Length: 430
Image 1 (cartoon, rainbow, N blue to C red):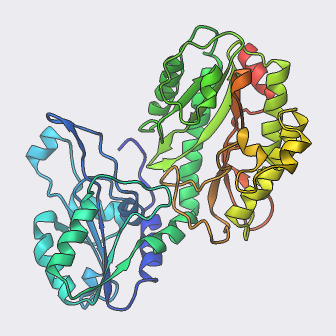
Image 2 (cartoon, one colour):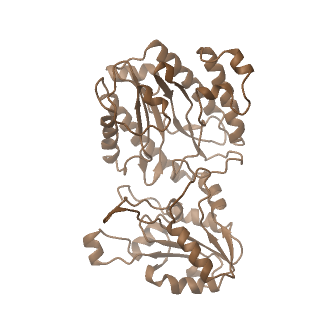
């Protein structure tokens, strides 16, 4: 791993919080992700399942975590199963976790090698009544492949048909959505790396550069600051490409007079950042570009202030829609008749701003969080309004990541990333 060691107190605390919500005489199991093949002997770079990482800090393949708070033997209340390392593996793949290193990372004292799993797990299952399975219930999830977790659930149900089963996901959705101070620090680091990337491209952008060259500049800065790279597929969209919400081709030449929308974020220690900024290719916004830009920024500033404990996600978006409607009227993109005759299920503003304003942030870019429950202090949200005008050849989106506080306005993790027109122009022309 490129990132620096994380204080294991985070993972100890996370396990304690999870186990406090488990049923009596139950155990929970969490599996690593698979390494996915491309073809021949090629594979996609390994990405750890965020839940086992959240609960243990273990960041390698073929790992299993079992939590059994009421285990007859105390040593089995927390158990890690790891792929046994060896001299041969160290030579070909690099060092894997030893039992000692696993304890240093996770705070878990009982560590077995993976070949002992079936024997030990059978013993633990015979001592329990309920098993918690870790299913993916994220509201955006659309999974077509059978995961390691899926295979484990299927085989466990076949081997232990008399056990009751329960769901880990609702517990994790609530726990993971509220960030520990250690997590906030990790996310701040990811945002700081993103800032370095953005400041780097302000010196680089000029007419004639390509979108993929800008992408390369970000990647250079991310890697040299201990990031694996982008937290999600980057969007570098010049001109009309900005009106394609998930434009990822990043293969066009940036033309004089155009704007570039950059929706990018560095990851750090598996934690995400998610930024969107706009820059003019030639270093100066036109009058119209600035009018729209300032309108989007005003909506972002006002929307941010609405993210407070107790706020409801659905009602928040309705209020942001009212702000956006007012700005679109001021820009001449809507008129009063458009608003008076709008479809309540698809308000008039949706013609120019068709996506949501905020989503949870954390270990996943679209992180865990139950949307119908009130917001809480410690949650991290994006704020990302946009106005997209294909007829005028540009679209604008601005995005920061903010932490909800117990009192007052949210804390902006991207507060140091330039966003005002004057600062961006000064930096590009300095």
